Amino acid sequence: MADITVIDLSSAEELCTEPGALERVRRAYARLEPGDRLEVRSPIAEHAFAVRAWSRKNGVDVIVDEPSDGFRRLILAAPAANG
Image (tube, rainbow, N blue to C red; front, side, top):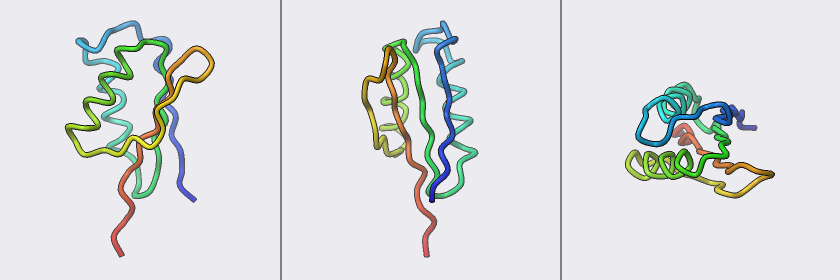
């Protein structure tokens, strides 16, 4: 069963033009093991936009993208190990 790491960006006030929130996502994704998931939560629309754009640019699968109780919830999937 895949592990899920959760990043809550609710306290991050920077917009997508500032690297703080997206850098946190990038670093957390880089630490995932094959098959793991990264859940990103944020009430700031620009964060979700930036995560989607970064995911497309880097070939990262966004397997969930939905509103959830006052914030946007995105789940990114790390590729499964080959074999």
